[in-house]
Image (tube, rainbow, N blue to C red; front, top):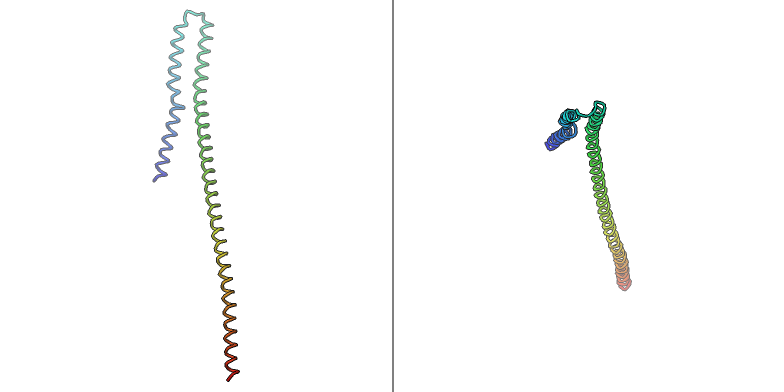
Length: 153
């Protein structure tokens, strides 16, 4: 459901961007034509060649502006998207670096616990060896005492 809503919102956004980047040229061109017609009537007192040259310059400028401005908008939008992607990538790298650091700390902590456990086990093994030696001595003493009783009878 969320993905559907996201797609609809993205489509609406794309349509809105297209409208503002492309469709707005239609009213501008209409205004430009009205401006040229209005200027033509204002420039009537000038000689015909100068008037045509002046109007051609205005038309060329308006054509350039109507083609150049959307190109600037698209370039700006691409630049903003690239900056957003770069920021996202940097955030992702930072998050991954934090995760790696956290995992390294966990590994170091586990190693410390394992070393402590190994030391405890080594101590327990030493204690078992000592207990075994003590039991051997006790058994040997008991056997000696038992032999002494058997030999004395």
